[in-house]
Length: 232
Image: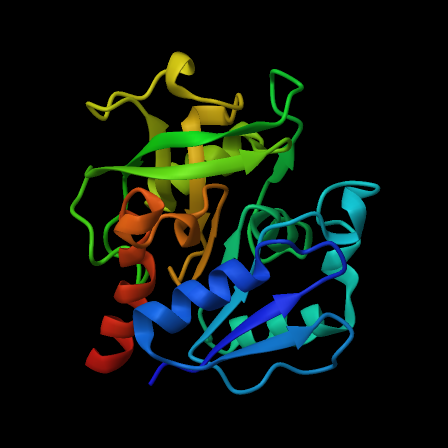
């Protein structure tokens, strides 16, 4: 059984979505952990979900990164516990220092909510082992600040170490400025840390995990974690 914990902040709105997705995919019970708690239960996976933590005041994720529970999330990540940040969760992971870079306002200055194509550029992380190298999948986005930015040195380091996990593309897998919905540098939609155990991604895999939702391309994110745990 997968022991998963989902962190809940004031303004989270995808916490229950990811809880239901994990429970239905893995038949496991998910713990909901309030941001003011000091510790996270022993977990095989910690999810920092999407939403508008603290109303997105200051910068998206900036206040949530200083919530009491995040000290333990960072500590557990350093000890090897997998941490998945989705949308606002990606922003929080960057603000907390678990991942490099920042998520800025979309280039269009508009909120974007639609399905996008993603290319799987790293199929070796514990989240992506169920995908094929350069496989094109479809996953929804819903954000106003998904424009990934980092300095050139950091971007080159991410590229050189294979830490760009997902990239915005078209249906054929071609990535260009035209296929990037938010202006993110190098079409980056998701990155991981050096261990591959901390993943931040703007698209929402929990919104496309069963056919009733219009597709199952997001399902393998969670199935990959379970498969990795079983193989360990």
